[in-house]
Image (cartoon, rainbow, N blue to C red):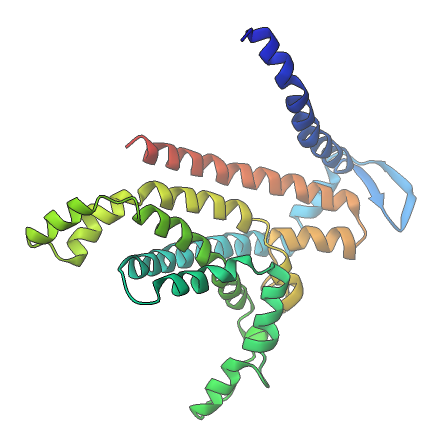
Amino acid sequence: MNPTLVRWLQAPSIIVLFLWMIVPLSMTIYFSTIRYQLLYPERSGFVGWSNYEFFYTDPAFWPAIFNTLVLVGSVLAITVILGLALAILVDRPFRGRGIVRVLLISPFFIMPTVNALVWKNMMMNPIYGILAVVWQAFGLEPVDWLSAFPLFSIIVIVSWQWTPFAFLIFMTSLQSQDQEQKEAATLDGAGFWAQFRHLTLPHLARPIAIVIMIQTIFHLSIFAEIFVTTGGGPGTQSTNLTFLIFAQALQGFDVGVASAGGVLAIILANIVAFFLVRAIGKNLTM
C-alpha cells in the first residue's frame, strides 16, 4: 500500500488523539495561571506562578506527597507478593481449582466506591463490622480502623481489590512456563525455593514489571476509596495528592489552585513513569 495513503488514513485518529490529550492539558495549564474562584468568577485575572506557590506551600501538600508515595509503594509490595504467592499456589492442580480462580479474581471487578463501602460498613465498622466481632470473640476491644489507622486502612482496601489483577497476570504467565525444566530440576534434587529462585522468578520478571507499571499509573490517582471512607482525615493523615486537588477544586471552589495542583501531579506522574520505563526497559532487554 502507498505510504502516503496510509498516513492519510491514520491522520484522523492521530488528530483526535492529539486533541484529546492536548486540549485538556492546555486548559489546565491556562487555568493554573489565573485567579478563578467559582464563587467570584468576576474577580478572575492573570496571577502567573502564584497558584503554584500557594499550592506547594499549603501545609497539606508535603503530607499529601508523602501519603501518595507510601500508598503506592505499600499497595505495590502487597499486591505483587500476595498475587505471586496465590498464583503459585493455584498453579498446582487440585479439586475445585476453577472455582477458586474465579473467587480470587472477582474482587477486581467490584467498583472502587462499592469496594470502599463494603470495607467501611461490613469489615472495619467498630460496632458491627466483621473485624470488631472477631476482636470481641478474643476478648479484645474493637478498633476503629478508619480513625486510628486511616492510611493503613486505605492500603488494605486498595490492596484487596488490586491483588486479583496481579494474581491474574502471574497465573496466566505461569501457565506458559516450561514444565520440562521444572521436572528436570526436580529430578536433579532442586527444592521448591531453588526452583522458585532460578526458574519461576526469572520467568515472571516481565509480568512483574508490567504489573508494577500499570498499577502505579492507577494508584497515583486513587480517590474513591479515600473520599468514601476517611475523607482525607483525620487531618491530612490519609490525604493524597489527588484528594488534595479535589479539596481545592470542589471544596475550596478554587479552580486556579486546583489546576496548579493538577499540573504538579502530572509532573510527579511523569517522573515516576520515567524511572519505571527505564527500569522495565532494562528488565525486558535482559
